[in-house]
Structure formats: structure tokens, C-alpha cells
Image 1 (cartoon, rainbow, N blue to C red):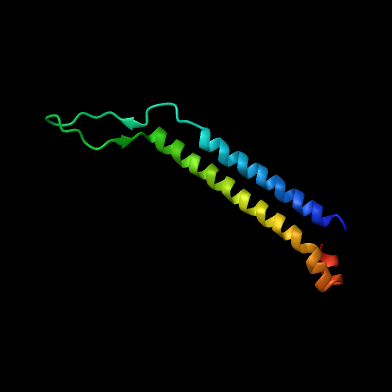
Image 2 (cartoon, rainbow, N blue to C red):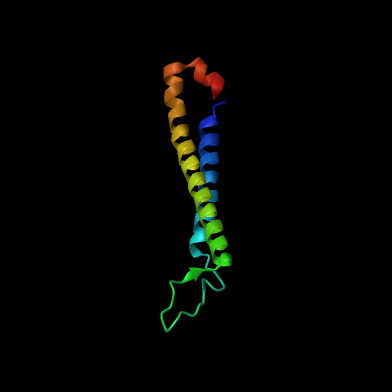
Length: 101
């Protein structure tokens, strides 16, 4: 398994690409609709604005996808770091690491 370093690195890169796409899509995605409920106040005093249920759901989904993208990026970076350590660990532990990786 001489190519394990390249394989682990490539898998990490794929995780990074997927994470970046998830994150970027949610950054540029804009909400289309009413963000706040329009309410009338008493004697001209308006109450604080309330978010619509549709907007709250959209916002929740947005943060879920951004969080997923961030986790994918972290996993990808960790895999790329791990791929750099495989040759070093093979030098120290020899057959044990060769058997695993």
C-alpha cells in the first residue's frame, strides 16, 4: 500500500471541496420572502419586529448546512495532515503502520 498517503490526501481534498461548496452556497443564498411580520402598534408605537416562521426555518437550515460544511472542511484538513504523517510513522513503527496503512 505505497499509495495510501496519496489516497488519504485525496479523500481529504474531496472532503474540503464538499465542505467549501456547502459553506459557499449558504453564504450567497438569499432569502426570498417576508423576513418579518408586519404588525400595527397601539397609538403609533410599533412593537419589536418578529421573524416569520418561514424565515426562521430558512435560517435554521442555512446554519445546519454551514455547520455541515465546516465539519467537512475540518475532517478534510485533518485527513490531509494525517497523510503527511503516514511516512513519518512508518519510519518509527515500521511493520505496525505498514499493516494498518
